Length: 298
Image (tube, rainbow, N blue to C red):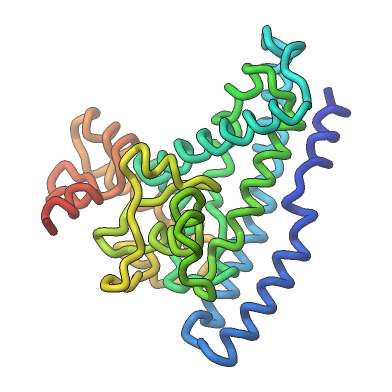
């Protein structure tokens, strides 16, 4: 089993892609420095790099445990001898992985204890390739079990982790303002920088929209899609922006906010709702969840 887990780590392409990420970051940074200096801010960028390093450390043990569980579930799968590594299975896995990511990512925005682990990816008020490396720290603790059903369907953990890597690598280039919109058919089918800028917006009409990884079709199908509008410039960040560049506050402050709200509530039902309902719900204040805010706007 230990050798198998090690083999999966070797098939994680994200670390191998890191030099490409940094090269693209340098190119975008030079472009922004010359013509769009407002895209980067030094302290914010350094915070993003700090969060990236913190995420790499936090991710090690959950990833080991998650991959180990994938092997356990894979060995229990009645389909493991049926699923192969031929291209039709890879194609099916591509859609299943993308579908899984959509629901995991949507949960990160619609379940508060998940949002507390994801918010560090959103609490920058700047949008650039450095922001892409500012990952959700706490979400690493709960991420990998969401992919266990794919192992039970008979997909080998090497295949699963490889596809997860492809998805994350694709998402990197989405975090740029250098590209406005692509041809219409691409914008219809795929996640693009335009769609993902919406996802990082704190504008009411953009909140909790466009959760896709590679295919934007899931958002279109399940009612979470929003177009980037020329009439509505994207305001990056979260609805109440954090005022600290401290890496640990950026990564973990929302956990403290959540527990403060839980402590305020007296009924256990309300305490549970602070964990499981979307950010913005309150037992004694107006509903500030994204759908409620959109309803008020309309």
